[in-house]
Image 1 (cartoon, rainbow, N blue to C red):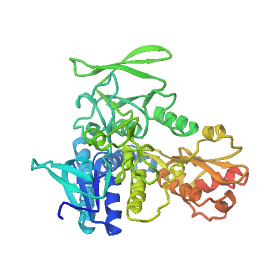
Image 2 (cartoon, one colour):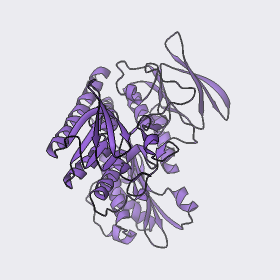
Image 3 (spheres, rainbow, N blue to C red):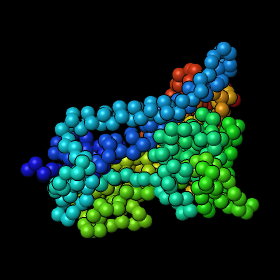
Image 4 (cartoon, one colour):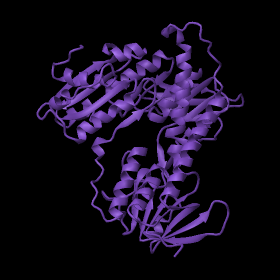
Length: 467
């Protein structure tokens, strides 16, 4: 019986551990298998340590601009990258220990091992400490093995000069120059971090604009701010080849509408996408369907083989920690016999922690027009916000998009201080189906950044007071 469970989860990232906890809450005898650290990429090599690094960069930037706050005599220290990295690793370790506590609290058995699914609702695990393999069994097996940095053609990562996001989080020496390939959340955040500490950064983006999934106005504002901070953006540009040189740099050949060009940098960071971890899992042996590198699932995350489930970065959809956690709850509740509401993929917020922050939910203006909506668009610049002015953070704006026929909120796009905290209001408004008039009757505290959302809604209907 010690090898028999009701639910076995493979992978202990935000999706995996959330599924395990929810399953245990529903009375399922649960085991979780993890080959590295509890918390997965997000807690150990992604969301959390990145934010710790970015906080250090933010504080350093504040010190450099102390005179803007009438603190002219402040001494600015030289950034100590090893110490900054060490702090981020300590924060990650604290969060991982928190997940360990959750496993104990919910009586979830933890196996540090690699795992392979087998037919007959079985899982073969091989302990990472070199112990003997063993088999576990459960009527419900959930795969949540996450993803890794995608290897791009012509950009072979060597872990030293051509690196992925993991190495970017643990560099011990600040490079003089860095070329970042990809301007999504990962690339933009790390570009901002190294630029803030003094590295000369160039961002290369294949698509026509940086942060290409965001509303075009937000992308343009972000690129303007990058340029102001000394970050060069090369959009519509493809990396053809990267070659480490004997001098310790990397020679990079890029191509765009102007032709090919040679660039040089001390370090090249590949931050253009991720690849699902589905190799060597036994999927073919079990007969689990895979399409375009992702496991095929239904809205309750059941695979093509009964009793086997998958969530997170290994299934289609946004590769985000909060999406994986939401999918985890739905999957666990379906396994536990409940009838959960499926995840609404049209109402997933995105967040990018550059300065100023970027956050969005719903349709961009371009997408809404493509879908045939007649729009009301409101925009509130933070230059008109008392709180933003007082904080010395008046860059950016809130943009809201409404369906003119129904007055429902189609999308919200924010670039500005605390944007990642503000976006939740728009998520709840969309989830609740609130109309513009209902939002305008919700009194917002003053002075706050959140007033920007209220003012943008008012602007869409010609009722803005502070514009």
